[in-house]
Image (cartoon, rainbow, N blue to C red; front, side, top):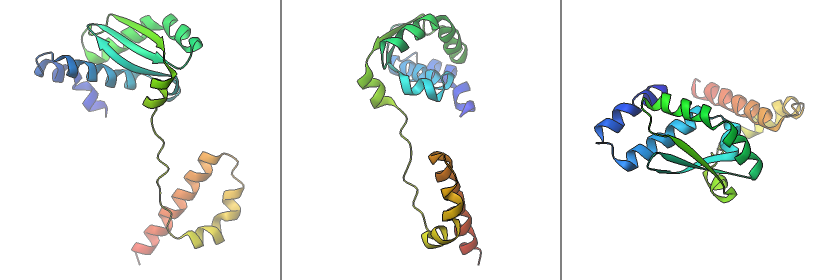
Length: 151
């Protein structure tokens, strides 16, 4: 992923500074310089000329992000290799933020459920954190699957 991000300046130049390519590059850079918690509260909405419009889930996030705006500008433009964004406008738009949130993948299909239920149910039940418990069960299922295919 990092090597693709390093190619953003070249991709923008090769596109002839196409507006849509520039916007998508800025969105990719935004996602790269922000963290998971921020992605749950803010999402890029539009690049208009050199103004990046970012939706926030509420007024508290909007206020906080406006205070940190100079730092975000520096990080974005550093990643893009050019001053493509000169201002970030934050707007409260919880609907856009919700639609833009990274979707968690819960589509893992468990095989060997009988073995998991019999052998690992007690161990898994001791894990309080649901995410960690699911990771444990996925790892156990994958291990059982590998054992099955190596026979």
